[in-house]
Length: 205
Image (cartoon, rainbow, N blue to C red; front, side, top):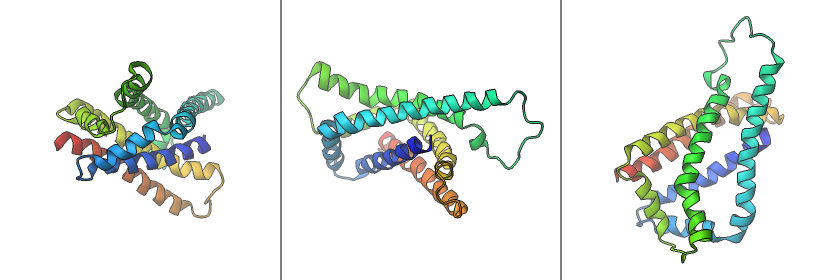
């Protein structure tokens, strides 16, 4: 669970860095170039993308399996509630379900049309389409923008606990626990703010 989570953290960082280029005031030229490369590079498409999808599926299956296993191991609820435990750590499965629902929407919005165009419609590649597609999804669409921003908040909360827990599970940084927690908090805030700013920018501008 920790290894797959760490892998997805690396992907989120890369994904945010690419999407932030859509904020560069060059009419989407930089974003289009990077997106076209990622969308048509055979290493990315046929090696890295299947690994990523497998990692996402594995992470969610493991999360559900561990939740079921933990519930079955306790025949009765705890007599006392640990007030020092954060809401996030106690509801990782809930935030995970929201993120899963968001991923399905996100795949429907961007990945499914890309697959249809390349492998079913088989139209000629348009290297300038990506910025317009991204802008079109959020432009004058309050509902989609709110759903995305709400999901980014839940993703940030999920990461805030999951990031530090991954290091702890792998036995890394046990002596620097507080430092790892501060890094996790900074990273989760950066992911939430970064992705939300992208959605809001293309909604407002």
